[in-house]
Length: 271
Image (cartoon, rainbow, N blue to C red; front, side, top):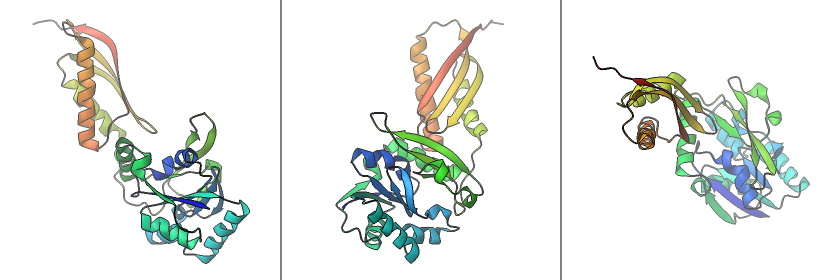
């Protein structure tokens, strides 16, 4: 069996990228948080995200329970798995998983920085810290929702570069994820409004919409002052750049898109 490792700190988006990465390197199966996933579908195991505290979650993820371990080992034989990607927080963790499941030595080590950009990692960290959300690389229908009191929602469908569906994700908030900072949407809107209101070309910030999902996007509708005796594209580009810098300074990651809509212009009369 060909065995690969993908490791990185918690909350950096390993599970989000795992299906695409495994498909890219030609790997058919994943081990993620205690689950055996083959061709994008859970076939055995119990997720560590079902546990009530971090200690039991780690034990679940590294297969310390005999019944759990034997179930996954049997499924590996049943599905005749020839290549597998082990996901963990460190090389030590993926080595432990390989040893527990008797997979043999790991052939190659990959790290979250190999599969995600620094921008993606920063946003994933922010979402974990402020919303407590975790991603499971399995379909929504396979998640035992009674384990999660606070949040279970559909993630996204995952496609290959050839638009072939290779799996789905589900978003959960485990019971052990007690500590996170809840930032209301109005906080983002206030910052974006403030950034725009400082510009001398503006008469009014008409509307601000902010979405933090697969993409972090701001859509801002503006009223401009007359006369427009300057290069409008240059000033709007400068505004986008300033918004991006302010957003990164306050929240630690960059927006994926900033849309500026000009609704109208207003003649400013001199008194």
